[in-house]
Structures are given as C-alpha cells and as structure tokens.
Amino acid sequence: MAPATPLLCALIVVLLTALSGCATREPPPPPPPAVVVPQSTWMQIDGDIAAASLDARAQSSDYARDVMQRWRERIYQRTDEAFIPWFSGYWTRQWLSMKVTWYKLNAGGERDPTVERLAAYLQEQYHDRVLAPVAREINPDWITGQTVQLYIRLLREHLQGMPPRYGVPLDQFDGHLQEIPAIALAPPPAHNASLYQLARAEPIDGQPAYAALVARLHSTPGRSGDWTTDAGISSVARQTSETLVTELTTRSVAGAISAAVGRVAGMLISLGTTGFTAMLREKQRPEMENQLRQNLHATFDEEWLDLLHNPETGVLAGVNHISGQIESSLAERAMQPLRDEEPPALAAPEREAQPPQPQAEEGNEDASYRLW
Image (cartoon, rainbow, N blue to C red; front, top):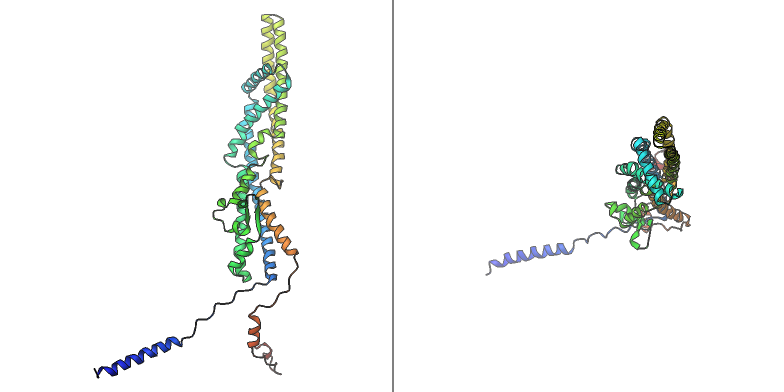
C-alpha cells in the first residue's frame, strides 16, 4: 500500500487545485441597468406618431377617392346599359301601364297610392338591375374596410422604425403604445383597443374592437345596400311614376271616347291613339332617356359625395374614428407640462471616472480635439 501513497497525494493536490480555481472564479457581471427614457424623448415619439397618423390618413383618403371614382363609373355604365334601355322600351312601358291599372284598382282609383307603389317598383328594379350587380364587384362597404386596413398598415410601417431610431427598448415602446387609445366603442370592454393592440393584431380582422367598428360602419343608415329607399332616388322614381300615371289617364280618356262613338269608329280611334302614342314615345325616347339619365346621375352624385366626405357615415368613417382617437390622445399629452428630468443614474459615475482633459497647447491646433 505504501507505493500508492505518492500517487494518491498527487491526485488530492490536483483536485484541491481545481476546487480552488472554481472557488476563485470571478462572479458573472451584473445585468445592465434599465434604460431610462427621458420624457422629452417620449414627447418626440408622440409627435412622430401623430405625424405618421396624419400621413397615413392622407394616403388612405387618396385611395378611397380613387376607388370611389371607379365605383361611380361602374354605376353610370350599368345604369346606361341595364336600366335606362329597359325602362324606355315599348313593352316595359306597356307592362308598367298594366301595373298602374292594377294599382289604381287596388287603391280605389286614388292617385297618390298608385304613384307610391309604382315608385317602389321602379326603385326595386333599379336596385336589382344596377346597384346589386355592381355591389358584387365593388361597393362602399368594401371600400370602407380596405381603406381602414390601408391606414393601419401604413401606420404600422411608421411605428416599426421608431424604437431603433430613438434608442428606446422595445418593451418600453410597446408599453407606451398600450396607453394610446385607437378604438373606443365600449361597452363591452372588448370593443376598445389601444394602438398597441391594433398595430400587433394578426390578422387585423380577428381583433374584436376592429370587428365591432367594421360591423357598426356597415349597419350605418345611408349605405349602398338601402339606397332604393333614399330620398333622392325615391324622388326620381316618383316623378317617373307621375308621368306614367298621367299617360295612362290620357289613354283611358281615349278609350272612353272610343267606347262612346261605337264599335267600328271606336276601334279606329283606339288604334289611332295607340299608334300615335307609340310614335310619340319613339320620337321622345332619346329626350326621355337623356332626362332620366341626368336625373339618376345627379341624384347618385349627391349620395356619392356624401359617402366620400361625411366623416361619420362615409367610407373614411373608420379611418376618422381611429385617427381621431390617436391624435386627440397625443394632443392631450403634448399639452402636459414637461417635468424636470434628472440625469440617468449611470451618467454621474461615468463623468467622475473620466480623467481631466488637458488644456490646449499653444502652437498645437489639434490639442483642443483630443478626447483625453
């Protein structure tokens, strides 16, 4: 056992040396202190966010105008192709005259109920032949949704570059965005959303407050889905109905005269009146179509302008709601007085650790630019 003693001692020495090395290893450096962002920096960030919102709103407005112009052109085209030729056709006028007769019988011969029922029928035809087909391609509700999403996407792009530009930690920047309201539709609380929630939601359609905002905009009175009851279009239909009822009354007088003068003479009068009316209609058809086109286009233009510019019910209503919440909140923050800021905790030790800078030497122009 004696020869093994030196080897055992050597192993013990090696083990103790290793243990002493572990025991004397320097401790890991402490975590870096939290970055303190001055209030003045947050105010600059708020100003940048407000400017980004204004820019995104302006671009969204330009987009909405362009797409709304496309929608108007399709309505014009569909009106000229599908509604006006149908309305001015001979057989359509005959069919409308029959409906007027039926309405008058049900109304006991009264004029106003007959005009109103025929106006409602014409409104229904305008919806089925013009508004509904175009809405399957493009409509104000779709334009509203696309415009809001464009605004949010542009605002996101601005926000992504702010933390590195201002040297702000991402977690602090996200916390700052959580304090800025973007959608305010509560109750319920889920119908409210901060700028952080709106900027980080993927997909945006799944964000509860955003979905509530879109649903509210689509249910606003005056959208494209219920234009057939709009006062402007109703007035055009009512004027047209008045013309048809008057025309039928004239034909009824001719029919009464033909019945009074006898069968043969009455048939001649009836045929003559029908032929004259048909010739007169065909002669007046271009003028009638042009007048109807002008009336429909003028009425549509009024509604189109309202949809484009009305801040509460137009296609920019969603953008106006979100940008209004963001910009008004940032404006309130900007009105708050700037608090006195203390220098960061690490700044003083670093300045004390720096050696004094030497005075500039005479004849040495580079001395004043030395760091130490």
